[in-house]
Length: 122
Image (cartoon, rainbow, N blue to C red; front, top):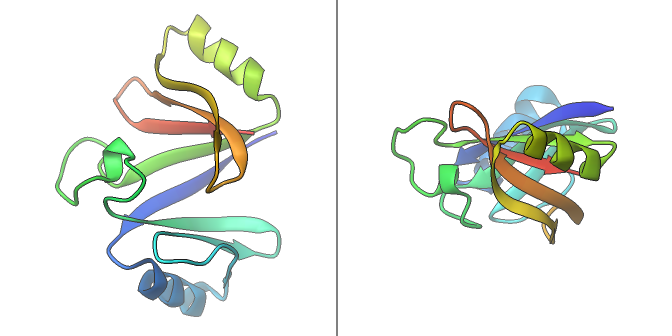
């Protein structure tokens, strides 16, 4: 199974989390000043990430550029297979499989054909 969990960059994670929770009736699962996971039931609705935190290249500055403020975050059933597929496609892999303490999952990062930053996670 593959699914998309969208992460957007925001100025204030707590304020944006409160806004989305009130707007959509979802709830926060992570909490904190720099990252929040908003869910409905067991489904992730949206993730919020503070501008400039955790050194993600598309979320360093709130200025316009291709893909700025966006990470396409995919959870996959077989991380090793996804990495092999990326290599077969000769994708621009920025970081091989590694453990992310924020998501508590193994992941790798790459760029798509248009330069968008992707995180592929277990």
